[in-house]
Length: 558
Image 1 (cartoon, rainbow, N blue to C red):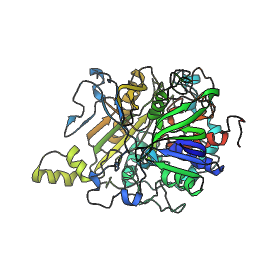
Image 2: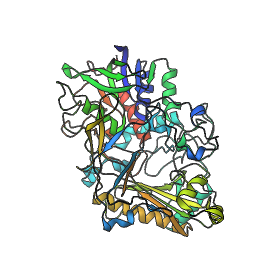
Image 3: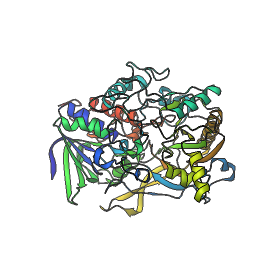
Image 4: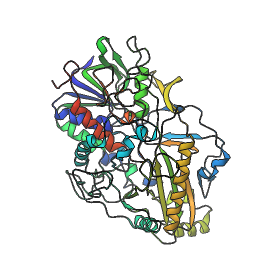
């Protein structure tokens, strides 16, 4: 038995778990954080100084990648051929006739998927919090933007967000802490194209320092945020929230610990957390409260696996909605060659953005918004090897000549759109596959209905128009989620709401039934937003939940 002296056990140390741990430690509560993945040392692990940097994506370690399975995905249809992924060398990338699983792109580790994100730090569009009452889709958030706004401000101060001082849609009671980054030359070209189309192209809000702050240096614009930041200028959870939690003296962190079950007892109280530690030993941690922050795939997996006589359908699943309402990343990436030598491998990833179609009613003929941004780095076209493998065919002298003519000329527009829940997209437990602890794996069911495909078609059309208006003469690669499941942002599988009949947790992220059980990750999102990166909202929700968290017996702080 371990953890008898803790007030709170937090499962997961990503955006939700890390922010929650810091906030609870500030209240002088004793917190145990259990993280399934390893700890990363930015200097030792993110070796962007090595000659082989381009061949090394974000470094994998033992336990840093979870396993999931996929139910069969939908067949591809001739009428959506224009949404197929392709590049100049391979033609169709998915050569089959069904949608294929590429990956659930996440990191298990201290800091979670913020370790490999590009730092986008977005507030949710206020209208995206009223999707059901305004448009009859998804569900409304149980509170409005104004309730979350002061917590957004606190998160921005902690992680160091750079961006425009004000936003005409997402009003701020305080301006962004740091000035926006100067746009790369490639982004400026895209801005010129957007201006021709009557679109607004503005600096993005990013958790990457535009000047030294909080003992961390400013960004050096290497463009490789997704491979891990060795300088610590990116505001990932390990160098922000978890650093503060550990420095408080109230936080104990155990990495490499796979939680297998949460025990439930009488009186609607969860009583213990079973986990296997890094040495393979089985342990039980007990605390006054338990916070689950494993993400919208792994959180429902853990809850569904935690069946007991008190929770026969899985923990917190009284409504039957754990794992339901799964929302994924709807995305499109479009790359083309520009006649000018742009040096497009330089600069901060996603340094610029177009929000013009972000509102839920901004796209003609469909509900749900989207955004567009500079995405050369997200397409991993910041080095010559990927140019050679994906964009420039051939061999020998002619290949070298084409490489010299192409390198640094790529412009990429990336689009991310709203994902709406549908009955065919959900998470359950695989009936056959388990992990090394014997716990069933999460099984991902994913289906794109006509609303998603119509929205994706708009994203494809607009991305191509932006590139053409920016001076691109020919496309060389396009990749999207019509023919591949490839998600970094996932939501909705433990929906938040006021009514226990149609939600899993209440507005404070507490289980409707289990009085000392909380969930703080994107699984509680009632809607996905129109392409916003979710980490800032997850962190704001965690700080809000920590403020409202009380001991189950009293409803207030001890």
